[in-house]
Length: 456
Image (cartoon, rainbow, N blue to C red):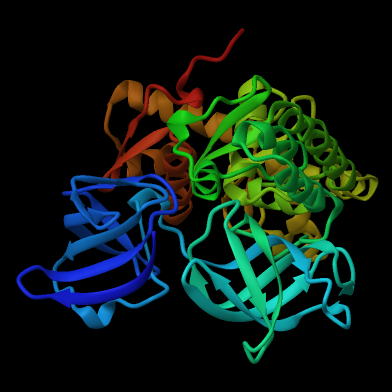
C-alpha cells in the first residue's frame, strides 16, 4: 500500500491511509514501512470507511499503526507498507516507456525527469536502451536511475514529468525493479525485457528469462519482482535450482550444462601453456576461463565437475585426470647435469647455491621436480630425492620398532647427520603426516603412506 496521508487521532495514535494495491492486511499483522524497513504492527483498520478486521487489494484503507519509538514525523506521503518478504528498496528500474504524442521533440537519452510511482515523487534520469532518442507517440525499453529508493514490482504504472515537474512527458510500467547496471543493452537483456513486456505471469516469463541468462536468476529477487512467494510457483521441467554459498540460483538446465565443456577446454589449454605446473587453483582457473559466473556459482559448477571425475585435485591444484607435469627440454638438460650430485650426496644433499648453476633457474627446476614427486623440499633451497627420503623414512620406522617414541638424538645417530639437519628432516616428516611431534620426540602415524610396507 502506498501511503498518501499520515496523521494522529486522539485515543488511537498514528493512522495512515492509502489504496491497497495488492494482497490483504489484517488486524495484528506486522508490516514493513518502506523504504527504511521499520517493522510496524496493525492495531486496527478501516476499509472503505468502515471498521474491519481485513482489507484487500483495491480498497481504500486506513491503518492504525504502532511500533517501538514510532512517531508521526517518521511517516509521510510516498512511503510504502508491505509484507516483510517483499521489502526491497531499489534505485534502478527497467521499464517500458511511452512518450506522449503531443511532445514536440524526441526524448533524449539520460534526460532528467520526475518519476511518480504510487504516491512517491522521485527525481532521476532515463537511460534509453534501444537508441539515443524516443520519438513522440512511441515506446522503448528504458532504465530509470533514481536519486532516492522506491518500492516497485513488475507491472506497477508510473508517470514521467519534466525536470521542473511542470509538464507530463509520458509514462510506463515497471518490468524489473532490480535492473542490472551492466550489459543493460545486450541482446540477451533486451530479449528478457521483451518477454517481461509481453507476458504477465512468472511461469510464462521464466523460460525466456533463463534462456537469456548465463549467470542464473535469484529466486528471492523473482519473488519480489513478481510479488509471488516461491511456494506458489510452478517451475518448468528444464529448470534447475543450484545451491551456492550465497544462496540458491535458478538455471536453465541446458545453459548450466553447456558451461562445463568450455571450462574443461580452458583447463586443457592451461595445461598446454603451463605443462610444468600441476594446474591452477580455483580462482586462477576462474580468471583464466573468463567466465561471467560469480565466484560462489563458479565453485558450484566446479564441484559438479569434481564429483563427476571430469576434473581432479592435487592439493589446491585442479587438473584433468590424465594430466602430468612435464619438464621442458632445457629443464631436462639441467636436471641431467645436477642429478649426479644428488645421487652422490646421499643423506646430505647440497643447497641450491652450491649446485654450480644459476640459483633462480635451479630453484625453479627443483620445485618442478618436487611437484612431480621426484624430489621433496625439506626446507627452502634444500631438496631430497624421493629415493633418499624413503630410505630415511625406513630408518625412522626401524627406530620406531625398537622404541615407539623416537628421540631426535637416536635419529641423528642413525643417519649420521648433525642435529640441525636431523630436526629439519623430522619436521618435514611431521608436515607430510609420517610422524606426530610430542615435544622433542616423535611417534609414527600409522595411517601415513610412508608408514605402509613397500610392495615387493
